[in-house]
Amino acid sequence: MDTRDTAPDSWELEEDAEAPAAAAGLPTAFAALNVNAKPFVPNVNAPVFVPSFLQASAVEMPASDAPVENGSTEADMPTEEETWEQKEEPGGDEGGGGQEDLGSGETCAEEGGAAGKEDEEMMEEEEEEMLLPKVAPAPPDAPKKEHVNVVFIGHVDAGKSTIGGQIMYLTGMVDKRTLEKYEREAKEKNRETWYLSWALDTNQEERDKGKTVEVGRAYFETEKKHFTILDAPGHKSFVPNMIGGASQADLAVLVISARKGEFETGFEKGGQTREHAMLAKTAGVKHLIVLINKMDDPTVNWSLERYEECKEKLVPFLKKVGFNPKKDIHFMPCSGLTGANLKDPVSECPWYTGLPFIAHLDSLPNFTRSSDGPVRLPIVDKYKDMGTVILGKLESGSISKAQQLVMMPNRHTVEVLSLLSDDVETDDASPGENLKLRLKGIEEEEILPGFILCSPDNLCHSGRTFDAQIVIIEHKSIICPGYNAVLHIHTCIEEVQITALICLVDKKTGEKSKTRPRFVKQDQVCIARLRAAGVICLETFKDFPQMGRFTLRDEGKTIAIGKVLKLVPEKD
Image (cartoon, rainbow, N blue to C red; front, side):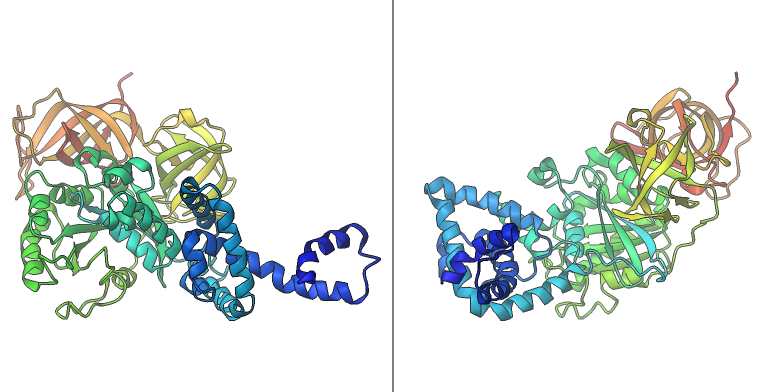
């Protein structure tokens, strides 16, 4: 016991005076002792024991079980937060709670000194395993994984965020401990089933109401690809945010709730299932995966009939929006809460023979992207952080550190100070990656979402007036020249006015009418001249489809979708 008590003194002595007076045997004994005891005991036991079990149970639990149960820790940060939160709770009831807590921790440490050795080694191994997906920088010679941006869309409460959270857990991007913490907090609010979605819904408002507001971002990797999850809000008030999310996506996952009544409300006239599928198509998503979620619900119970019923209702609609059912759409059943059929096939569902969700994503063919095109990076968001930081998806071209770029439409010349692709710093980026750029030469106030970073030798077009082909999707009355709406084009949102209707286009034959129409109504296609309130960046659909597609919205509804045919130069 003496040695253990005097251990700290020996440290100080050794530091101050190299312990000249100590007997020759003692320092060696101490050295051995400290090597074994110091690194392990506090590290493993302190963070693990104190938070996970409150005072009483800390003493009851045998020391050797605990590390294994909590073996799946990944980061030390959540543990510290937990200790504080939880120390406050018991501390409130009994005055000396905190000290008792510490005491029990120490006793456990002494008991577990011998027994905990094997556990500690196991835990070390487990920690290493768990940490791999989180960091794992690819070896420099490895080919860069293809970046794919996946947007989760669908009606409110269909389970988009939960599936996103579950995928992050299954691929090891969120550790078990963080989820346990979320689960506990969710239980306190009587919202047990929401805890997975909290991995993506990070701010307080979203968690309290259980509704996503902003597009959540996260990423995960499979063997062949690197995926960015964009978790779009399903609520109709936040459709503008959802459009911004969908405009960055290559692939959309339409989440449908199979629960009785929920599928029907999502799919009826006012539901968001229809609107989202259409907006995703307009935003340029080519491939759609339809996840029929909540198959584990008692009203469904993995029934093939219900799955087929949902499928039959969806296919004609998705066909009408413009997806090809044979090539572009893939249906699969799943359960976001239990994680069934997301990573591994399920036994309850013998009739589904395809790949599970993550495996299916991995097996998709690669997207073609032009890395030698001009640099185009529409800005989604910006903030101040030791300089000006912008977020966006690189649509074409490649960006490297210290490169000079031009911010359109203001024509500010900026320099790239640092590049982060999905929070990992890199020196250069290729198309399709979600980037954070730190810029020099521009203030955060001078940037707005919808601005575009371009290469100086090839600027994107900007203007206020353009001609476009529009399809009126839903509008009660007629639309005449002088009509105002809100234009969503790539990440830009601007008010526009239809200044003139040029001609009607026949849907079947594509013929244009000879005379100018005086108005257009629902389900008609026309070519019109639009004028934006301010200068916006855009390209013709033919030159650069990602920046030539748009939607028009008014009164919280999507009224029309269209593509830019030609840019009209301003008259001076």
